[in-house]
Image 1 (tube, rainbow, N blue to C red):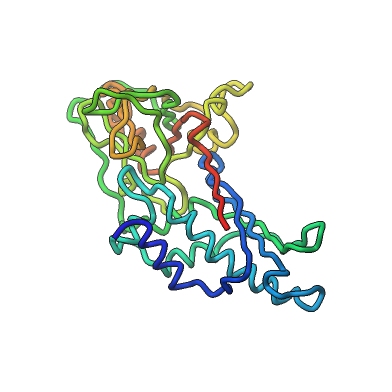
Image 2 (cartoon, rainbow, N blue to C red):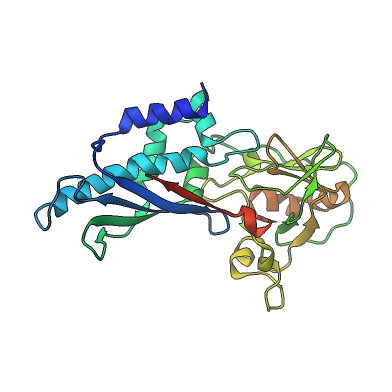
Length: 293
């Protein structure tokens, strides 16, 4: 059963807005701000509604349209290198009820009328951290890899991995531009797993913070944006990714020597368990549009 089947299942399970009512959605997934934003609208005339008497019914239709349309955006989110949220639904790892619960937690502004008084619309924002949190299933964090031959390493306040250019794909004679997902993995050049979601203690935030390159070229002593400093502090370890791995190029490979700086001390290993990791990606991959009717 493919992704399209999962979409149909959700549509028929939850659709309640009349087929004659014209609806639309415009928005975007913004990985750098960690938000899914959408403006949902309905045509009042197509719903047979006239103002002012039909305002309340119109707002009800709008809420129903939002729940129908935003699911497409949630289903298409890349969860990890091999799976979208839709794939997880197909496998039974995520439920239709959980998707609706995520949609209902969106922040929204009160509905408003278009200038021609023909459309009713509202803006909705879903934090990606909420979706990530819903998929964190472990009760206690996995043990982070350590080394019996530690190297001398400074005590860092966080980890910044720069992966803003095309990188070699492990095991292939080609390269790809790394892309974001909810749960990227980090490997060293010997293909030891350094970081993944089960190693993180907290569930209430993303396991990495994504940023475009300008986030590390700010006019301040650290060079970091305010958003990055909140995650990685003022003295982060800065690493250039060496390659990508996975069915989709979401997982990063770092040099073994850089990995040793992280795993050689308890303090630096704790940066992983606390999710103090930022990934710098090309600006073009950090946003994509959600459109539909």
